[in-house]
Amino acid sequence: MNRKAAFILLFAINISFAQETLDKVAFRKCRKEFSKKICLSDDDKDGQLFYLDQCPTDAGLLENNGCPYPDTDGDEVIDNDDACPTVAGSSENNGCPWPDTDGDGILDKDDACPTIPGIREKNGCSEKKCSKNYEIARKEADDYINFQKEINYKSLQKPVLEILKKIKFDSAVLLIINPNIFEGHGPSECPAFEFPETLNYTTESYIWNAEMLRNILIAIKQNIFPASNNSLFWGDNGFYKENDEEFGKLNREQITFINKLATFYDPKYGKIKYLKIKNKKLSKLPDNFNRIILEENGNIENKKFHPEITFVISTNTTIYNYTFKYIFETTSWSMIAEGSYKNENTTNNILKKAIK
Image 1 (cartoon, rainbow, N blue to C red):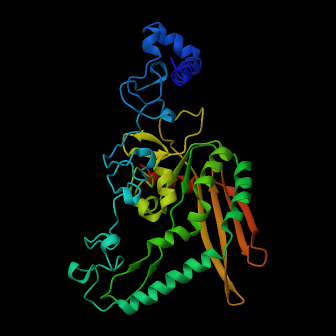
Image 2 (tube, one colour):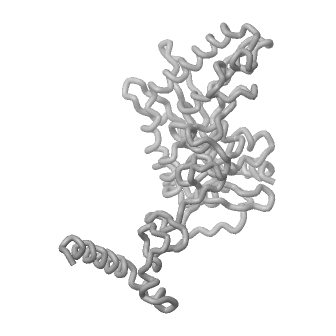
Image 3 (spheres, one colour):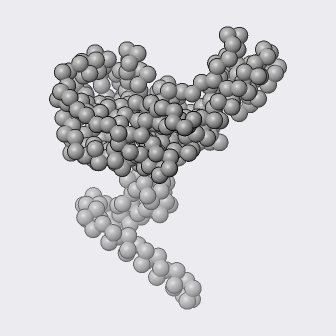
């Protein structure tokens, strides 16, 4: 045997020995049923030995215990990389279907006027003369985006977390996270103009981002159900489900985050997405939810709009209000009002009715 062949053989032996000793308990368990040769085999050639491979006949990935990642919607984008794992889409759009924002049957990627219903002969644009109104609405949307970029919303997250840590939550929490969609306006013969890109700049998208939601879970130690303000107060239950239509009110980061959350099955509402706290088993939905909601207002000072944000936090016993005002000079938020009062069950009765 030449040196090269001997080296390769020695390397293979070392690898096998190293993998054998990775999990001695698993190896001994395997040996109770199979021979050593089988336990150290790798028939599917994925680099994971039989005794460690949870899918020994299907080639997979080491980080997934030798199993291939699933492709639930069959769109050839594995769930691990798919922003819409249960709805077939395009790999060019992160596994999601291409949107048709204006609902004219022409996908946005092929639509020269993606926010204005049109016809194919005009490449998705309308025959009506709405261009001037669109220009006005477009400017309003751009002004809104530029204004939002000036505000340091992330600096508000820390004081809000400190507040939440002090409150004694006594039930699972409904966290209202969806914003109002920004819309431009035109005359009656023209459509209402929607600008989905503004969803990346809403106050809610800045404050209720994935990192903040995870931190809230740690802070309050209660299961959290992200909820839609629109659904909740228009008579629906408010819960988010996989690829729910209310996702249209959220940005891509929030949609991806919620889609990957744990799922709780309720006989009435189906599969509900929620942030699950460890060691807190959920057998049914609570009769009364605690609630966290963000309310945005503001005032004009020196010809400049100064946003104010109030957090309304309700438990089964108490309702708390904390109002913050943004200070442009210091790019920070200052608490300008706080208070609490006894919860006479008015709020929770409304919520209870909404989810029943």
